[in-house]
Image 1 (cartoon, one colour):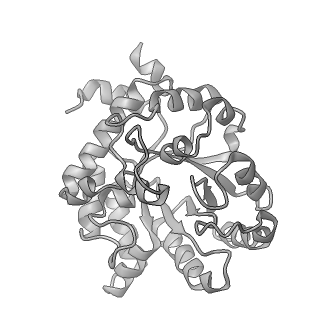
Image 2 (cartoon, rainbow, N blue to C red):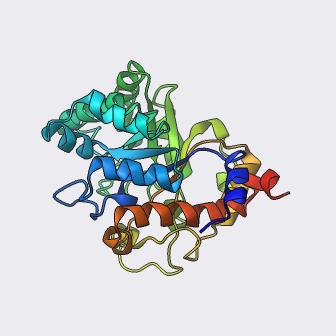
Length: 295
């Protein structure tokens, strides 16, 4: 267990810390259900572990509504446990005509959960979608989200058509003022993006930072290797270097812990939330993001 006084000291100087849906869903991405754990149990587990909020999947929202829960009931649970730094994920088909139903669902989920932004992906099917061709759909999505007071956070992914910072920024420039970038540690290192290159970004462009660790060697295609992430500090990624770089840049975006792995899936929800929080706090507490707390 983390030393309580140290933890409190670190929390006073670090950005908000969020638990991503896959970390505590109890199922692998793409499963039949969004989570095998009750909504209330996941929220409570995250709060007790120390998280400030949750990133919840729009499929999760659809399942809760199908089970008869109203928006106000879901929001009441989040409010009861102090989950205020919330977001919605992971909108993949927003640039295709068939994605309209999911866009509406994600926007509704954002309203229900009090989300600050909706996480969206680029084209992950390696179809080499031209960025310019995606621009109108991205701008339209940003406008619709802005009407609801919500941001749109584009995730740079190590495969697909937005795997470099140049491409990510080109698409962001076609969006609205509420568009930001998700910097995911796994994708940054697996895509071969150097920390010096990352440091050229304006901190205002970064809407969220996602953290997880990984083995030194990639096993199989990247789309498969991403399913074998590790808890922070339990792999070979230079998370300390990444966090130090973000600190020097002045990034204050929320830190979201996203561990996708069979190990995390097999845990009871309380254990998954606690381990995700404590391992991340050890890494963050040893970085420049919290240099004031160590002095």
